[in-house]
Length: 117
Image (cartoon, rainbow, N blue to C red):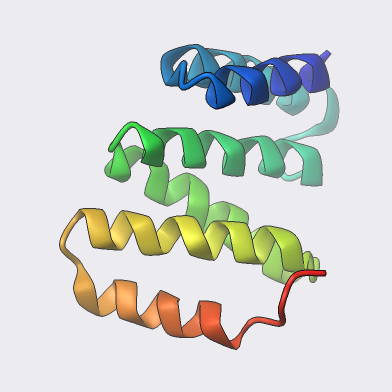
């Protein structure tokens, strides 16, 4: 069921219905946490998606902890795609909040990541 909400959120995000996407992703996270646990890869992936939606809404303070947690998990499991996604979004968070030093640090990390296939 969490996947259904996540898929719906993807469609809402494409339609720029960020509030709807946020609601759907929060529901998918709640379901995944109950069924899979807070630290499960799918739960954390939904958290990254929610972080992205919050960035799109300019809600950087709310997005940052989700993105940091997702990045740490992705790095621990060697999930290169999620590492790239989280790092890209963190750059946007730091740029959006005027934290240029941190944005530069994450931009440098992003440039050092292997290219996506």
